Image 1 (cartoon, rainbow, N blue to C red):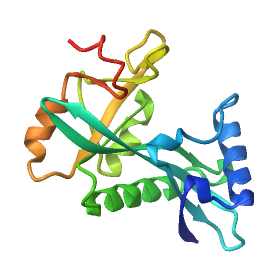
Image 2: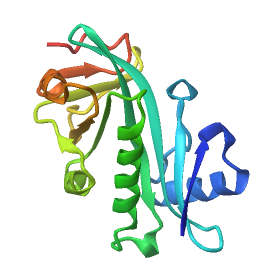
Image 3: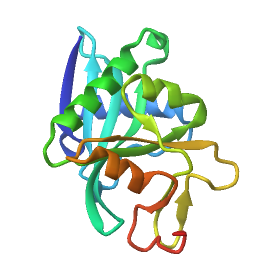
Image 4: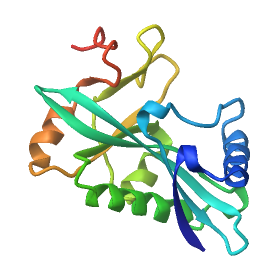
Length: 187
């Protein structure tokens, strides 16, 4: 098996189709792809015949908070081929993505949310839960928060800056708007 990396816009058609099929099985009704403004990158673990085994996306966005603008990256659309789940392949891929973000001097932190039951999966790859933190994404017209009714989400992070303790404190237990128009939720 080998790891491949692409800007999402440069994904070969066949790989994009495979990823879309994996995502549709995991999240029926989902739409493949990400907002190009987030500079999406795709990481793939492919088998010997080129079959996608694990796929994930890395998204990049400046996040203003506590008087500073953080260079944030997030994980999205982490999916493992159904028949190969439970073998640690997804976890190794997530850990590799975290290591690549940590080595990137243009990234201060990784920040994303997941379903609460998946938190331990991401923690095993080196991310930490930020208790009480809420992410507000979507658009100003249609905001979406990780604490919306019916959601059971947690926010996870990894801090790569020169002062991770300061940054952890800035992001713990706060409402973080991921779009400039989503500031009405700030406490």
